[in-house]
Image (tube, rainbow, N blue to C red; front, side, top):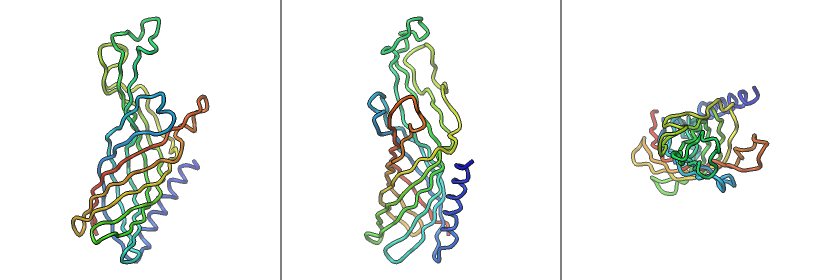
Length: 222
């Protein structure tokens, strides 16, 4: 319940920024995520980068000729790819036959993300962006993407899925924006997660942080 209230409070805060600014520009934004994890958990996983997406709305609030604020509300898919080699811990009863050693899967995490970027204009068509982001996990699942033969798993299996229970993630975002038209821009940002995604797991002591590159197209509607 407390986490649900937090989500509502953040959305209302972002909305108030949209409404109360003297100069307002509203638009839509979307593009690609290139996501992975950092931390000591990567010492015992075969994780690799996963291509996903983000989509949402933003407002560009002019502060002066050089500076602006840009709050966003995004649906953002993060996570990572991984590979399991069952040959390393093959079961003795044959339930996981040696004919299927390697299984690849994608960890897909869906977030409600709220970045607040401070934008500084370097030149007329280019700005430097920096600011915090908080995100709430809406849903999480693992999907089998490839197997090397017949066995226990098949492509498309979902061995784990469930509600994210609005689990909080937070971090910092930095990047650049290039304005190639009056109402359109292309943006490259990097999100550096600072919260430990494994902090709810009490049986092991490990760290896992989101790491996401974002390539976005933004279009101002009015």
